[in-house]
Image (cartoon, rainbow, N blue to C red):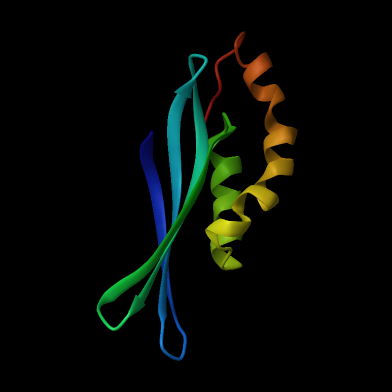
Length: 109
């Protein structure tokens, strides 16, 4: 898994600071470059890291721009790692055909 792009946001609660990192990742899947998303949240009280949550979907689409659009939506709406699978699942189902047809033709990103 390789990092392609990354977005960071910080949200301050009363006692806790939440640091979110949204990552566009890529890997080779069946000989095709596949793009995915990883979301990480670290919670801090003062300087102490008190919680870490991370979730990823490594294979979403063979088209980088589709996954980047989705990543920006997740970033804009401050989606937590906990909800990533629920929200991205339908996109994974929709884009799955790309890997079947992609075996015969190259994907242009």
